[in-house]
Each structure stands twice: as C-alpha cells, then as structure tokens.
Amino acid sequence: MMPAGTAPPGIATPEAGATVSAEAPVPAIALEGVTKRFGTLTVLDDLTLAIPPGTCCCVLGRSGTGKSVLLKHIIGLMQPDAGRVLVEGRDLATLDRRELSATRLRMGFLFQNAALFDSITVGENVAFPMRRHTDLAEHEILDRARAKLGAVGLADAFDKMPGSLSGGMRKRAGLARALALDAAILLVDEPSAGLDPVTAGEIDDLLAGLKTDHKTTLVVVTHNIPSARMLGDELVFLHQGRVLARGDVEALEASDDELVRAFMASAGATG
Ligand SMILES: Nc1ncnc2c1ncn2[C@@H]1O[C@H](COP(=O)(O)OP(=O)(O)O)[C@@H](O)[C@H]1O
Ligand SMILES: [Mg+2]
Image: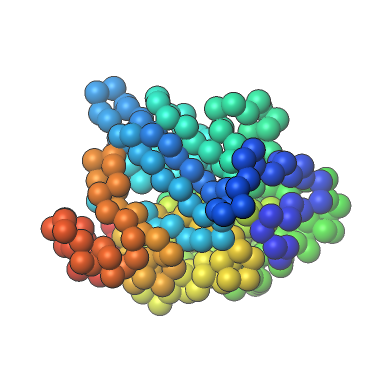
C-alpha cells in the first residue's frame, strides 16, 4: 500500500492546504461551529473539532447523538446549516464539483453496515472504486484488489459473493474497499458493532496498522471502549450536538460529567 498522502496513479491530488503554519500542521479535518438541524431537531450544535493528520480521533456518544451525521458532514454527503467543514485546510462549501470529488477521493468511508454490492464478487467490490476513479490497467486493478483483500486477511475471498461472508468478513471487505484508493483519511462508523470481541480486535489491529504504517488519519465512531483505548489519540464524547468531553481515556474516565464516566465504565458495550 502506498503511504497516505500519495494518490494512486490517475488521481488528482488536491494542492496543499490554504494556510500552513510552522508550529501546527493543517488539521486533516476541522469543523468550525458546525450546526445541523433536521426540522426542529438540532443534531449538531455549534460543533468545533480539529483532527491533526496521522492521528486517530474516536467519536463516542449515545445512539442518536449525531455521530453518523458528523461523519457524513466530513465526507460531504451532508452540508451544515451553519459553520464550516474543512478537509486538509479546504472548506468543502467553497469547492467546485471537480475539487469536491478530488477531496472526497482523499477519504475512505466504511459505513456502519459495510454496504457491499451484493450482486458482484468481493473482489469486484474492492475493484469498483479503482474502475470508477482511476485509469489503472485491468491487471493492476485486479492485483491491487487482491492486495487490499490480502491486507485485511481475506485473500481467499476474491471470488466469493458478499452474501456468503460472515459479519466480520463483510466488515473487513468493506475496509478493503474503503482502502482501495489509499485514502489519506479513513472514516469508520462503528466497526465493531455486532462483532465478537476477537473479530472486533482484529479490525482494531487493522486500523492501528494503517495509522502506524501509512500515517492514515482515522475518525472512528465506536461504542467499544477497548477499541477507543487502543486506537484513539483523542476521544471526543458527543452529547446533544456538542462535545461534552474530550481527551484521552484516562481524562474521560475521570470526567466531571457523570454520563461520560458511566459511558466509559460500560467497557465493551456495543450498540
Ligand atoms: N437524513 C436525516 N433526516 C432527518 N433526521 C436525521 C437524518 N439523519 C439523521 N437524523 C437524525 O439525527 C439524529 C442523529 O443521528 P445519527 O447521526 O445517525 O446518530 P448516531 O449518533 O447514532 O450515529 C437522530 O435523531 C436521527 O434520527
Ligand atoms: Mg450512527
């Protein structure tokens, strides 16, 4: 796999961020005062967050608190009612279609349900983004798809249909597809939900390896405290559209807020 930040051949890489300071790198992702409402429901409420490149931010919080909505704002599937979402220093709202599409290609997204195409093989699922977004030759696409599947421990699944895979295998196949374009930023929505602890641990190992080996920036929504403990450089606890607490595991365990402490004590809870 290529290091994060290196686009595969055939893909335009967006220029460096607009503002570069000597002290702090441009955040891989920044949300500035983001507010999102659905009707009368305010899901994100003046949310501000910055994720440095090459780090892992774990997003915690109760169900329905806006974690998936937050990820959809980062990938540009949803737009804020107020505030800005910046990816590598670029305000998504200011990008034209071509620029937005180039920025999106910097990001891989593993949806909560893995969302594989069930009518094509696992290998073709992984090949799909390469067919769509690169001009790689056929044999390169197949080689890379095999390599991605190998990297998630599914070398033998290339010709299988998604329907024949277990939940954990589907997740890993989804991860291989999210990695098909060597995304510099990977957004993962509840990777361990519904998985047994061993399989969940394997997914965590894969994600940790991406950060270590490829300096991939990770945003991981999780209910799994052991995962957050292992992966998270920073944990962000969302509640009612705001950041209720942030810091490392120890900081959240010692939070002044009872809800945060209770959540942290429910180690391994999924949902
Ligand atoms: N497209 C949408 N239209 C209306 N309401 C939505 C939409 N997407 C999410 N919501 C609502 O926003 C809230 C947060 O949802 P979500 O981000 O999925 O929560 P979670 O933290 O469990 O991922 C929920 O109340 C959900 O019903
Ligand atoms: Mg969700």
